[in-house]
Image 1 (tube, rainbow, N blue to C red):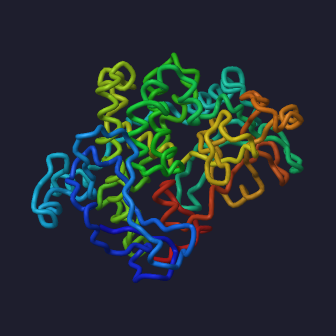
Image 2 (tube, rainbow, N blue to C red; image 1 turned 90 degrees about the vertical axis):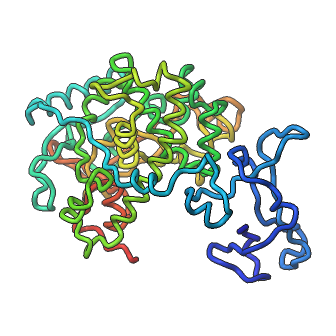
Length: 444
């Protein structure tokens, strides 16, 4: 077994502060799928932190186990051949190594591209933007437009947004999305159908948190695609329908996960992106694990919303292809915003630094660009709530918004860009499917 015993200089440490141990009694547990709720780790007493006598190896149970029931432990996620070499047996729950490797080579297929002309696509975009105001309550000053990015190695015509009025640059609101129109985990808990299927009390939620080991930031990135697929399946019944239809045609062909090795070599030469193939295989591995462990069982448990009969443009929303599309749409568009130091447990679950991961319709239409450094986006709440801060239950959804403001002048008709983050170019390519001369090389 491997375990971390904290950041204490008392024993010989391995990578990530893990040390090798043999643990009498603890190692008597057999392997089994039910063992996912057994957590084993190093532990030390509050006193004498640097004293080995105060340190222990502890296994804790996070699910009910009845007296007399076998206690099992999930050793690791190795494949069958690896298990046979190390443990001398092959569990039925574990995947075949060769089958798993073959899966990693499968290139997900993208939805068929729209047959709309460029002018028709802009008209569709402006219609969706207008309905976002009336149906989603989103305040914005955007118009859909095409922009020429061929000088940066991109397409000649790329959809984006331009300013619908002059911005003075003193904090003008360019887009304001009510909290109720954000795609957050709160939206799952507020939907009576979704709450049963994937809410915090569901079987799917428990499986996902065990798989992701409680890392809530990762949890959002992996679970928000289910929310997108759900609304995709609702069709015209979804209040986001018009907006989804507009973004559904987003070109993801430049994303490595949708490329064959040959195409990846052509678009992203190994000399410039030396680890991209391996990283892409890892991305596909995670996507397949999520599909096998979460989405496929979910489609069987709740066929009424995620079953094979629920389709969008002829393709089941719970297929691997659909999930690959949705997960990359989320990965390339989701935000982490601070909504203030709200009372713990109210409305939205706490995240590290109070960041709430979400999708923000309309705001995410801004293309990446250097001039976008003067656009600042964050969570805001109404002054009426601030005056009542501290009184239990004083905050309500309609007092919270995700707001982007301009802190430099932007002329009417000028493209509105946003600086997504400071990732290096290889990482940027994995997430967004492109890089620009403004991106630095990753240090491998």
